[in-house]
Image (cartoon, rainbow, N blue to C red; front, side, top):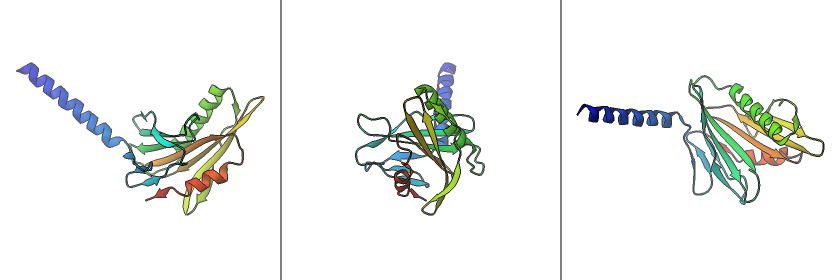
Length: 184
């Protein structure tokens, strides 16, 4: 009988822990229309008719839970990446974590592809009536240059959009797309 009680209590502990983890995750779904819906926060349409959103690897720490989404077009690298992050401490949103995430992305991408890069430099901007932070970072080697474009929506949960492009002048097209993101 005691063994059964220990097993039941252990099972209940696992269930309660799983529920707590689920509560900490940003509530995000991909709808049948291809729209990403961040509960009570944003609606993010497909980046193009040729692809679809897929969920990547989730990461978490004592402070943050980040869900990663990639916009996949057949036979191509991801066209756009989205990171939705919840601050578990629930402090006033700032861009410190998000900028560190982007710095890490740029550094890892450059190192993995054997490119040189400068540190991202962020600036405030507006897309429509929404204030956000953006940067463009050139990555290069002896024969090629690529650009990482990043956008930070400082809010709860935060949204970070990243894309790698071969064209330095890709910003207007990216920002036209971002103007279609509906924030609540």
